[in-house]
Image (cartoon, rainbow, N blue to C red):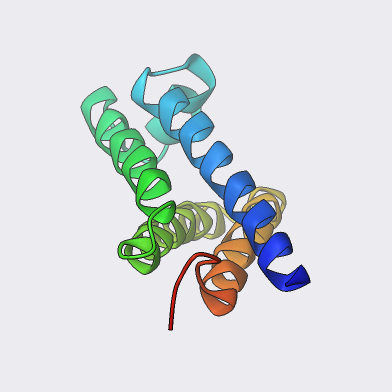
Length: 116
């Protein structure tokens, strides 16, 4: 029971962060444009990544699409980690790593409303 509560809280954090960061990318916030433009993202590419991030956050909420949502979110985070590593930016990579691990833990604990 306590694991379901912890997992529910982790899911809420992941969904909130997914929507927050996804919207920042989708709307082309200057800090997002600065970070992603150095990796060759155009405004349209950043909007697509933002939309995908928000979609993945929404998919996490439902038991049937839970794994797909987490997979998409983790893939997006891994993409950002790879770009940071390509730039030899260990600080940027270290900031993203807990979010990747959180998605993996959420997948491991499974959806709290899933019925066996």
